[in-house]
Image 1 (spheres, rainbow, N blue to C red):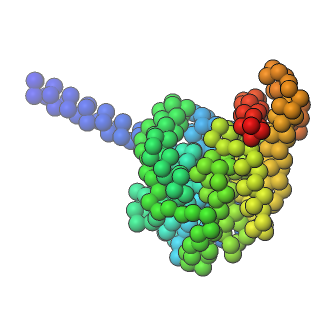
Image 2 (spheres, rainbow, N blue to C red; image 1 turned 135 degrees about the horizontal axis):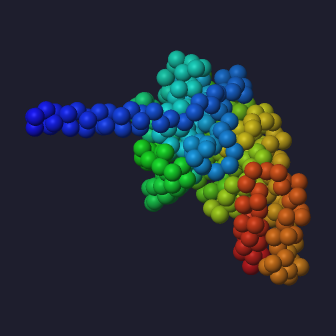
Image 3 (cartoon, one colour; image 1 turned 60 degrees about the horizontal axis):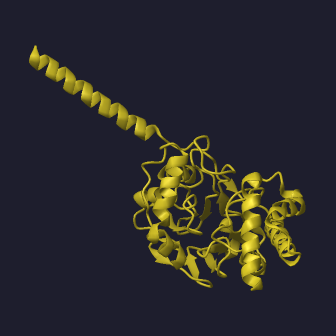
Length: 319
């Protein structure tokens, strides 16, 4: 009888472990299909907003360029689960292997999916700006991993930090298959690690979070003037298709609209500074001036922060 009980207990334990393993395997980000934005360029337009249980932590715009050498990815998402979803969606477009990945900046909602890409294609290089790698190594990678895990109530806990292994700077060009990938970095913009990727033959630019469409995000690591100058410079590329870090892909108007938002907030902060307004007058002034953007996702959360950050930037620039 004791032997029988022992056997049953072992069987139950093994069954529990198998169920737990199966449950872990079943955790996956729901499928979001790639949408074609140019002849060989595709984008998954993720949900807007911040990482949540509802969106499973996935809310950026992963990109894909199909070259003769294979698939090139841009920003494969916020977790290993998001990266696995991106790979599933790649297979719905092409059977070609992934041969390279670009990470546009240090914010982990764009690149923690590296883990899935590296597991599936360990020899495919992952590229980023040197500042992105140094900042991620200094702790921001794990900070973002833990943030998304917390905001998804543990759904993404299987994610680990997988850093890029190849560094690129402004003006660098890579020839992959029949496509040229040109790097744009003009200093601190949304962050100090921004790397925009121009696909020359496609007339496409992957902007990272230097541009968002109908969405606001944090500016605490960026500068308004730097972001505006970056957009002025990258528009000189003459590209036709512009992929923001969040929101819908569009023509140059998606860039100029976001630039105008930045200009509106910074201009309001400059006026407040020049008029010697009290701090409690700043947000109402910016809210009034930025009324055209009040329907953007994240507006109520970010507009006060943007106003304060812009004012501090004005003070620094004026002194």
